[in-house]
Image (cartoon, rainbow over all chains, first blue to last red; front, side, top):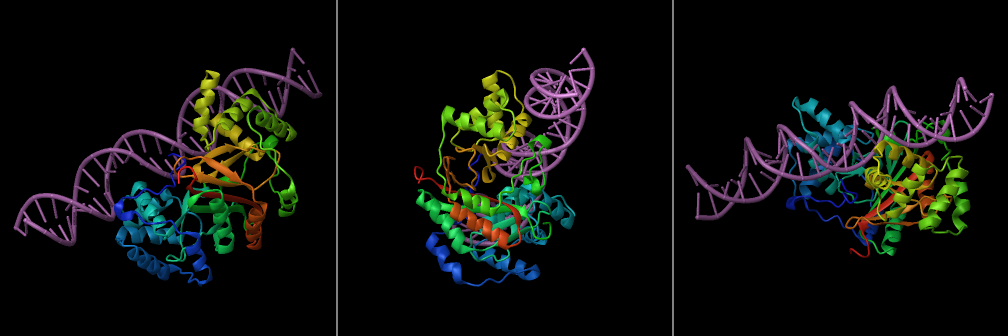
Length: 179
Length: 179
DNA sequence: TCGGCGCACGTTACAACATATCATTTGGAA
DNA sequence: TTCCAAATGATATGTTGTAACGTGCGCCGA
């Protein structure tokens, strides 16, 4: 896989405009979050996906549900295994990747680049550049939304002539529990 | 490979303390850089590696030289291929990984997480949290040093109870040339 | 009603990235 | 010289990610 993989390439129906401008992001800085969990989260995810003009299928529901049970970034293969169990029938990683790509494009999930793995977005429908904190010891991931900070990163990149900017901000370290 | 891979595991001789505290990093904010290139860069790299108590071998020199020719993040396999050519003898990826890990630990190179690839550090010996900008179209990487920004990221992570923090700050987008 | 189309998903194969384990070489210190 | 540690080699295997093509199903217009 080439280094430019992140350029999202989906079929026509999946081609969703991810180019949130700084101004747009800034607008969202003040809103408050519903940090969903469990059934509430699944419901919010369904709503967001349907809003985006996509279908909420059994397979997608199962994959989202499994993904949402993790508090660590989950690899596509982890998910494939669990979904296979859940369904009593092998689900190939390939299928999982397809759906994860869709989830990332529609903001239902995030890819954690430093872990080659995925996390459910606990507030789908809200657009943020998240900052992820991943513990090197226990793997647990938490996230921070700090729009001031992330907008500074965007601004720095735009100042260097970059456009259609998507920040990847992750912090590796030891969490409070493992410290 | 598990998600906590980033926890550097090297043999005794390679075990180098990477836990730069915020205060230490802050101290460096004012210094000015020599942005090395070519032979000058290789020389600076050699000096930095020897400073760290490591040997500057033929193999390491070759790998560094090849890595430094790239203006895009280079995968270990890319490097293995070119070094193999250069030496007229196959060099296995695993040897390259070993040396890249050493380079990363000693600050001669950086891993670009969102590309699963590596870049030579153009100012070895200077400790920074770099911000990388990687073009989704042409793959070219540039870097920004903005200690104010990166220290804010560190501070945010430390505020969340994280210790031994290592920020991963990368920005994907379209560079000025490809825009 | 039937044919064609689009979308979701399945199946298989393979490419790319990374590590584990043990063997061999080399150079310096006892 | 003998021994040891560090560096590298060789081989195998594990993990992550794509490509290419096939199947099933619902919808819609002729």
